[in-house]
Image 1 (cartoon, rainbow, N blue to C red):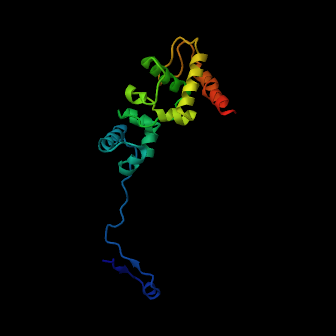
Image 2 (tube, helix red, strand yellow):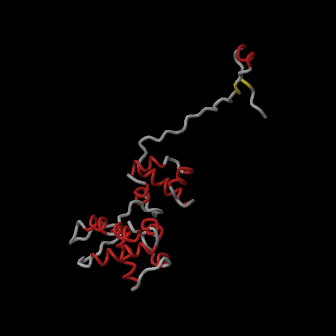
Image 3 (spheres, rainbow, N blue to C red):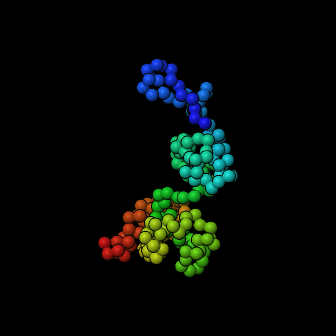
Length: 191
């Protein structure tokens, strides 16, 4: 059923510019969330995660707050997930050193070169998609790792995923990034 027209002036009625009449209370101001406590944001993240797989977009659709608010409060989306005790779906800006450290752990655990299928069995921090996207293919990722590992034989301790360098070599992350994967990829791609 069409809404009744609001034609309050004679001029509007003559010219046919009558607007539909809105029922009382039609216009409502959305609730404004200012200075929301961290605990309230974290509780809402957990609420959405119980019902659905929590992603930034999913939270934008069904969360009580804007995801940008969550990011501003905690510094990053992943930072908010960690504070809420939830698992991180995607890792961003992972240094090559940490990627290689995970491959080193996998190789040592398995006693052989890791395969893509091994990611499911070992419960790793970073998935195979990170390596394929970063290095172009799984084979190129392994090649870059071998070059990194063999070139760093003097190292006494390999960092774990999440740490920056080794205790005996605090600058290891920067050198690995400068000399590791990019050099390997240039030689593999003929650049």
